[in-house]
Amino acid sequence: MSFVAWHPIFKHPLPEGHRFPMIKYELLHDQLLYQGVVDKKDFFKPEILEVANLEGVHSPDYYHRLLALDLTASEIRRIGFPLSHQLVERELRIAEGTIRAAIAALQKGIGFNIAGGTHHAGSNWGEGFCLLNDQAIAAHYLWKKKRIDKIAIIDLDVHQGNGTAEIFKGRGEVFTFSMHGKNNFPFKKEISDMDVHLQDGINGAEYLAILKEKLDLLFQKVKPQFVFYQAGADVLETDNMGKLKLTKHDCLERDRIVFNHCRANNIPVQVSMGGGYSKRVADIVDVHCHTFREGISEMMH
Image 1: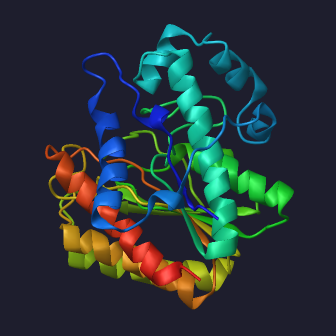
Image 2 (image 1 turned 90 degrees about the horizontal axis):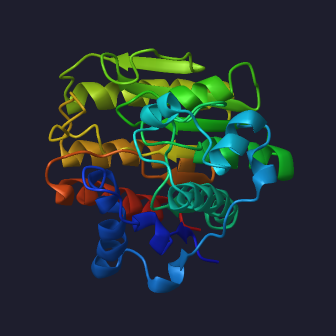
């Protein structure tokens, strides 16, 4: 069974000025093949998400207007991309890819989406390049279709997973954990089940010590049956938006801590890539390649 979601539409061209956030996805696909981390047979092309799978995550008013390209000008500005049918199709395929990667993880131990991690999308809004919340959609799918009722979403992007927190507030089937920059976007934070607000300039040793302590607590307290991991590369010290001081090696150790906890507890994990805004795209791709390599090494049955 293939376990890495990828589709050519993930790399579709955007108008000048909006292209940069998309470049890494096509480069990551090619680099994973070049390095031999995965094989062509490991990739699958997700179909378009069935609209029924948005129910219970996004409000009907929001997703019907999104699909009809009927959002207001202020809603579109909040998303940050010009709205188009191709962009919406991309998001629907990403969400379907995360569902299928989660199903693959139940069999193989791990499943990846080269894109995804669209954690700023809330129940009735899109924000920060996120239209639909792929891991929230997949978590709800596992709860509804697979009867998995103890799910943890571990969000280690430098920005809070505010949309994820809002969607699952007060819902016991999904435990939301976000470790992010205190003074970074979004400036109005939501309340996750466990939030860690990091000060600007924190170094790798401090970051990793906090992460291990919090994950020890999370796994003891929640005892999840499934984990979604948002593995943002924007914690890097080279990131234009990050404000933290992690090296590439620190990011690898971060991934190792997450996967070690999952492996030790025999918990499957789905991984979406999240953000990354370093000036050198190669730095972002390196971090994501390390996440793939470490996850496959630790988790594959």
